[in-house]
Length: 369
Image 1 (cartoon, one colour):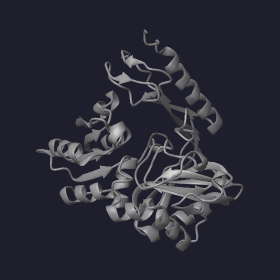
Image 2 (cartoon, one colour):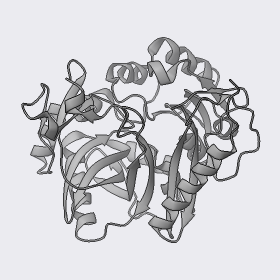
Image 3 (spheres, one colour):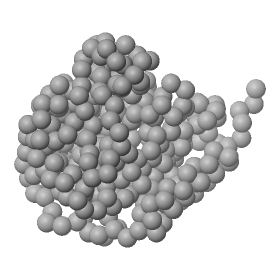
Image 4 (cartoon, one colour):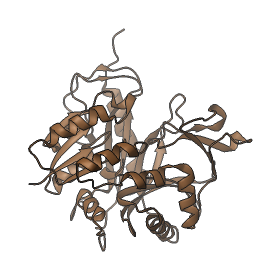
């Protein structure tokens, strides 16, 4: 059984998909959750990941320790590397990278470069700027290479500066497309409708996603745009595109050049796993077709609504994922776990996921004061 290295903010979904594909997952992530350890052959927890992100001096020794005696056939990078192309370039010199390389990251995560790519590929994209516009109430400010929505703010609340850019607001509903790319062409795995779970100053914090079918003409038009973007950028493997949709029109906001938060709701019940399809796409092969899905699936992040202190719960429902170990300290605003729900349609699946999230929070006792 071949070993694969996985490095991500949370490696659990990738590890489960890799295990299903017949690999031995070796995972370095920020949490080391119970189900990550159940899916992986070995796990290394990277300290202070939520605060500091991916750092060379902790990540590289962790990967070296995981790889010792294993001869991994691939290194797959998940979330956490969007703003670290230099680190990805260094990792690619040490292990067989099966993810987007540093050049592609720079191409699609630099806001001016990405805007130029969209213009070249004839894809609608909101105007962007590096300095605060004269009418900031019509703009958002985002951190370059940011992910998860917590970095997005109204431009009236933040003046920008190094590491930030401004993007013009657009009308429409949020839609995301998970797709496979081989550097020249792309196949859309599926579409999801995402929602935010605002808190404090984080108005756009990622809350969850539910599978949807936008249907014609929108779905094929988006798929064609993603194929053109892939040809212009060289994207490979699993990626996601975030869009705003208004009727049959859309704007492409950004691309997340890595496997993301929707793997759970798109993992096929039968046939090749998403991890196997990701490796094949990185090596230049796209599937002729993807297995059909029945009904709808939703996943939601459960954020602690108060300080929980050290987690004591051991019996998590089977519809939860990213389950923390007893003793892990969870503070207000921290991700506690993920809940997953399936139903006949998108509205029912989303409602069930939100109900399950509420049940998890209600089950936790308040921290004594």
